[in-house]
Image 1 (tube, rainbow, N blue to C red):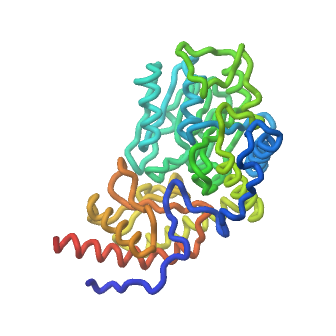
Image 2: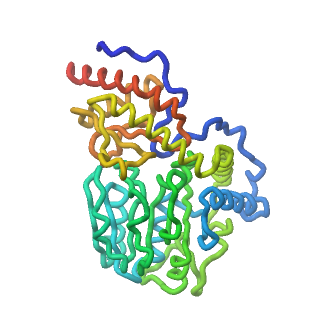
Image 3: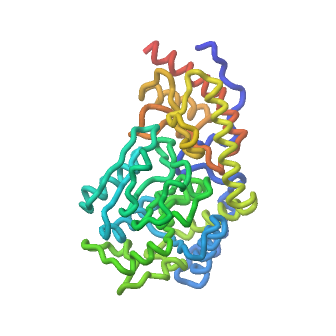
Length: 380
């Protein structure tokens, strides 16, 4: 026992996982439309539901008519891989890495595609020097580093007159920030982040310069069928109208439609951003009140408001596992241990589907679990 009492009540929805993330408030599988289940995705009904999903995403993102949006296989990873394998190789490549997923794109560019690559790195919690970037090259980066809690502050650093393409892995950023679509040629994300949707499907957004690349450049390597976005020098337009390359889960599509319609009901993109910011502010207040807690991303200008990564004084991997285990057992917080490749710490999802009241309620539970974990490990 410690002198820190166990709180009397837990967060109503203790879902703080950074992916898959909390479902939207009021979610119930019974509320999903099911008429399309058991039907072909190529039926009129199937195509209509896929098109509705795409149209809702376009509306909520305020996406320009110049940009195409398609549902593709393999979650955000599949979407970004698809973009890399189909468009890279025409120019030198610059990759930015300040956490594990950015490092994954470095590995693909250097070791798999064997491209002429410049790698600009920063440690966990830091952002690379964005002024180093040569925009005559294609540039790959994660807009919001889910495993480090570090994001780019805005799109001002992206050259308006760039010769290369801007590839943004934006999976924890889409629907959480006001993204400058005129600066982004390729963006990818997945439903299971800010929308709290189901996994397995990615979303690929292409600007006009990316389409031009697809129609004018043929990679030197063979492309798997699920990566083929062009045929005979023309974009496969059907992919961006709901005619998916492979068979999608229509149940996952309906789940995404539910989340998108919920988002519309709370004010669209502005409502989503406001909820995420309120959650991040509530967690920041918790951190400021506790000397043993800190932000891995020390600069507020580049600190994520979705995947917030925290340092814990004196904590090693064993202590973090103990804290996470205690909180899960009590039903106070699920899945909050930091990513396996990141420094030992906690990771609290603050995206729009989380309720701010639950973030506030988490604070006393963190106090209790920290004290309990320290005592248990000291006695071991």
